[in-house]
Image 1 (spheres, rainbow, N blue to C red):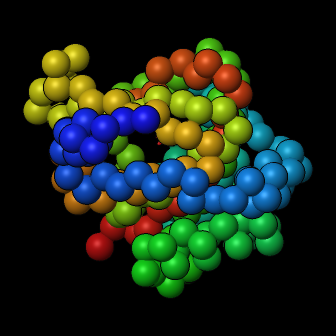
Image 2: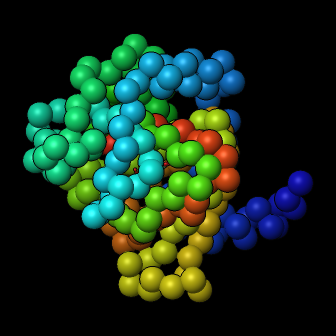
Length: 195
Ligand SMILES: O=C(O)CCC(=O)C(=O)O
């Protein structure tokens, strides 16, 4: 177990605007989500100019369409949120003290072992980012836009059933990425519209 002092030091190193909530979901909620994901027709995402190996399902509005490359997997809208995703969105929205509808975008991602996600900042049309992790553990890394090197990189293990939230400085001034997953991991990313 981490000593109080170490825990404090570790938290102090985390970029401002990042919140991590372990065990946000119950094991039963995780099971329902994984069963729901099993019914989705996931498609291989395009990340910048190459296929990312990550498979995704997007739930977004017409208004989002121009932000995604036409004909790509990211452009495909999987339609209205299924009931299990409506329930998860409500849970996350309550945690953020927002109405559920404020979370205008949902993305389900599948990372098979060996699948990474490269350094990026989420689209500026979105505001707060909330991410649920399911099944395997993954490592998320952050680095300031102004200092894109290993010395300034901070990382955090994202345990299954955890929630992370990115807003403010970490959203505006930092990039994030995940090195290749060691185990099959799913994530659900929920986003508000930028104000
Ligand atoms: O899987 C995750 O939690 C990260 C997803 C992510 O960074 C993205 O889709 O932009």
